[in-house]
Image 1 (spheres, each protein chain N blue to C red):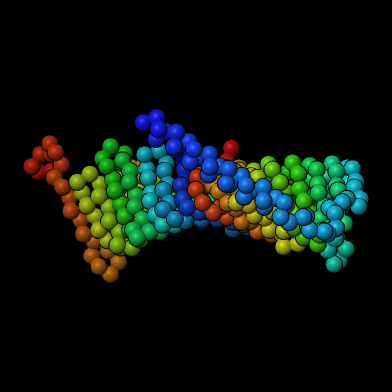
Image 2: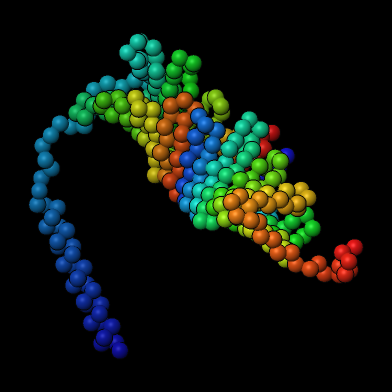
Length: 184
Length: 141
């Protein structure tokens, strides 16, 4: 019995050594590829960026505690971003998160960590994580858990696809639990 | 005000432009002891909350206990439930069993408050099977 245990131990040790060797050999194989360093070219504290439509009317407002822009890929990292989607009637939707990343073309805002999307009228809020906002197309999406609440309704599920035009159309993709009750 | 309704489903689309929430995929609606099962359920909301529920299935089913404590089971291709008026309408090969009594037709209306049932045959006739009541005297008094 002891001899078999010893053999098994030796076998495992040999396997581990072989794997370790493989890993060491891979590390030394390829030097990091040359390319532009991911270096910030400007940053702003408590900044605000406003997006306008062709007629010059403000359509979205992005604020953040800190904005850091990177020359190499054109992205902007955001600390505590808050975005508002605005139309002629005023602010319709607001979104905020712990962190964010704005794409180079300024069309896609990835809200990272805990994120909240709010509609002002009629009131509704949606709590989730890692929410992608397509700003021009006024869409939102995540694969995370979603908690939607509006007066008289509470709906939870996993995965979201939302069209934010008008009062909005929100689809939860799986594991849906809903509760509808008379509004107070 | 009607009691809240709880729903479980595979997916839901909340369209507040039209004031509807459409639940799809193995939908189970629960309201107290009342349970509706269907493939698709539309909940129509207004400013006061949920007003109507429209269930479709093959069949959609309703399970309940009526005002006199009798088990009630209904099924049909569609079940419409007026949440405030507390009236359920079953259509499309509609069937309803209330205690021992059975109803079959194209359109069956069940009033929750008093347990009254009204059935219409549409093109076909209504089929009703009334079970003898326990303890009832011979002349029906």
